[in-house]
Each structure stands twice: as C-alpha cells, then as structure tokens.
Image (cartoon, rainbow, N blue to C red):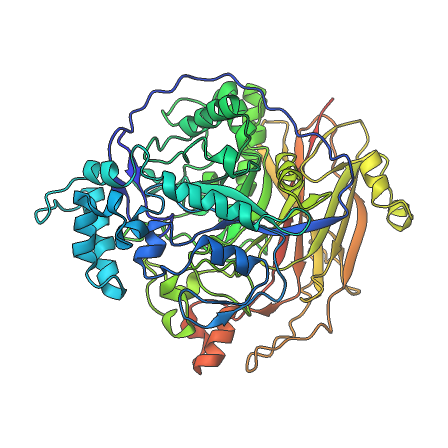
Length: 631
C-alpha cells in the first residue's frame, strides 16, 4: 500500500506520496489503567481537543492565513479577536478551560512558510511551483495552489508545467528537519498560553490517514511541555497511514523520551466502514495483541463535531427515536458519495462489537470513552448554534452556506455547530486533565454545557443523592463514567445527575443506553428513559411522549417554560443478568432549541426548508460508558 497525504481531514482528495510500505516490529503492550486522582473532581473543565490553524495546509490555501495558533489560544481564553475568515470581531461568551491546537502533521506549516518566502522551503522546486501557482497569495490564486497540490500529490494529473512529483513535494516540504521550525513555534506558543490553574494549552497534532478516501484520522496530544515535545517530530500519515504503525511510534517515543500520549479517532461516520472493524490493516482477524495495543492508546473517541454526529444512525438503531441527529455521511473525495451506514462507522455499534470481540479474544479493543470537539478550520473554537463561525472559509457566513463546501457533495448548512468535551479533573492543569482522558472520566456534548455525573455501584441508592456527602460518597462506593465494575449477582445502582447549561435550555430527559451479549453471543442494545421532566408517563410500548417545542420559527426565540433545570436518579437495570458482559452510558437531551440553519434563514429572509436541515434540534450530552464485567 502506498502512503497518502490528505487535506486536513476535510478538504482534499487523497494525495499519494511514497514509502508507505513500512514494516513495523509488533510491540507487545499491556494497557495500564490511569490512577484515580488524589483529590476528587469538583467540576467539569470544558475544552476543545480538535482545532486547526493556518499551519494546516488546507486552512492556509483556502484563504485563512490569519488563523494562527496564538489567535486560537487567545480566542479560547475569552479574548475578542478578528475573525480570520470575515474580519468581524468574535468573542466567546464563556472562555474554554483547555484547548488542543491540532494542525495536520503532513507538511505542517510549510505551505504558509512558502508564501512567507522563507528560503529553506520557498527556494525549492516545490516552493517555487507553489508561489507561481499561488500568484497574488490570496483568494482564487491560493485555490489554484491548492488544486495544484491535490492534482500532483494524488497523481490525478501529471505536472507538465513544473515537472514535479509527489515525492518531490514530500522532500521539499516535509522530510528531514523541514517541519522543525514550525513545530518549535507551535510548542512554544502552547507553553506561552498555558496557565496552570486557569487555562491549559496542550501540545498536539492530527495524524491524517485517509486510505482510498476513508477517514481514519486521529488527534494526538500530550501533557509534555515544549522542551520535551521538541525532542520528536509529529508522526504523520506520510510516514505511515496504518494505525498499528502510529501506535508503535507512540510506544517507542514514550519509552525513549518519557512522554505520554493519547490518540483519539474522529469522524468514524465517514470512515467508509474502516474505523471500528473486525480486522487489522492487513485484513487479518483482530487478535488479542491488536486489541490491547489499540486499547492502550485510544482511550477515547470523538463522537460529535462539525462534520456530524457519530453516536449511532437510524439504520443501525431503528428503535431509537433520537438516532437521526446531525447525520453527515459525505465521503471526503471529489465525487462526494453518501454510502449507507455500517456498524464499523458509529460508536454505539462499535461498543457492542467490542463485547463480541472480547468474547472471542479475551480483550475488548473498543472500550473507549466519548468526547466532542469542533474540528474548526477557522482558528475559532465555536460550537454554539447562536455563535457558529462555520467549518472554514467556505461556510463562514450565512449567505455562503447554500454553496458547496469542498467536502464531498456537502453544503455549508450540512455542518453541525458542535461539539465540546468536559473532563472531570481535580484541577486545570495539563497532567490532571490528561489523566481524566486516560481514565475516560470525560464526556461529550454537542456544544451545550450540560453538567453530567454518572456512577455505578452496588451500594448506590436514591437517598445518596440527597446526602451531604454526595458526590464524594459516590466515588467511595462506586466507579465513575469510564470505569469498569466487577459484577455481582444483584443489579448495581446507576447514579445519574444532569444539570442544565446555566446559559442554555432546560432538560427533556435522561436516558441510559445498554449494550450486552445475549446467550447466543450476539450484541444487543436497549434504551431506557430513566428520569424526565414534567408529569409525562410511559405509554403502552414503554415510550415517553415528546416534551414539546417552544421555538418561534419566525423569530428563532424559545422559552424554558418546559423541561427541567436538573434531573437525577439512581436506576437499576430490570433486565440485569450477572452472567452477561455489558456497557451502560448516559444520553441527556435538552428541550428543542433553534438550529443555526433556522437563524440563518431568518437573517437571510428565506424559508428554512431551503437549508435542507431542520429548524430545531435537541442538543445532548453523551457520557463515557461504564462496563459491567461478570465475576
């Protein structure tokens, strides 16, 4: 298999380079659980672990050179900044607590350096070709340079004008120490903005594997500081597009340099059936060793972001009335097909598949926590329906969103204003938040800031929720989200406590999603409504009536006259079987609120139907699962 360079997970077809047939030594590893924090987490810290700046070549070439890492951190910390796409002033109503600037490792920063006339890259055959194709260094000229990169790298069209090949671009703009200057700037900028106790700036990048158009991307980040991170160069898909090779590099680098990492898959919804497979990259049945290696590094999965929601799909969960949420399945190649969804593309089916693989191999490769982030390519981390900066330059304004984005056949309004990750950590520091990811005590939201606690334990009771010792007592007698509970013969109690976003909508309901292995060895799922607002009753089929909808379709306003500020309970599974392996996770739903497509339609004076997207939606949170393991 040949190596491929891909546009920032979104904007380009595959660019084939060379040397992808690397052979890695299989490293035997054991997953080591993260230790519980010395102090109990008192609050969730809110962050975005997936944000791109102009050091990602697609961001720069699509006309957003002002989206620097410095600007990204300043915006995340609450500063008013000029939008790199529109020039307007933007500011978050609430700052983030942490941010990972995750630019693509492929050609990292060197396209921007070419157009800044930095000689070591600009005065190369590839650099000179880019400058000639880029012309005025703005607008359509930059798009010409982008098209040139795509065509030459992917082998779509021979470079008769400059006589260059994909291997030349690799040599001139990536290989050797070509990325060192950019990496130094990225790491030192993160250190400059890192303020322990107030704001955490993580060092990270994106590994952008895209074989045959399938999204296998991972965000990699570390708690290391700049001096430690500068001892290695970010591993890219130009070195290898195989996840196994990425894991081997992470192992070698950790052992050699004493730094730790997490690798987080995202957009499994457009992985063309490859993200959560039952085989390795060579087509061999998944082994216990493969499962251990994957579980060691991929502790969490990004299940919701701008390019859609990857929790589940109505075709895969036909009894789930809330499954069709921000569905986005545009394969990111020029033809832009929208294939039918398969189990290997969504998180809930993957969690179920993990139980089946564990039954065969003894190891579950898909025991992952769930997070959300933006994947913004504007340098601005915006995940609010009322304050959405778009994915990139092409959908940065309402009047542009009826047009193609360059991502398959999608239009601007197909993007979702999402998401965020909440980490339960005792303090806002690199190590404390990183440890929360390692032990999976994190959860995803679609942009809202719902508060969510989730515990499981035999001794958890309803009375505990009202006790003055809560939540400390829940940690003492139970395990939090992301944990594993050794089963007993009696059903454990699942403590759920959801609190509305202080600046957002009331809550509709709390659901617990269960997955288990039945007596025939097949994975099953069921959704339980466990606590809800108002005096609604379950009907004869066990379904809860809708909460209602207060959104005014003419003004885009809504009221909190329905729903609840807080929902909490301790629930026990009425179908608990102590002999079955199972997972449980929480989904919290808000009452309906306006989607940004409605707000755009009102601003533009058009019918919301023209957007092709719904007028309203129900924002949500997904906890990391708790796994119950038979004794």
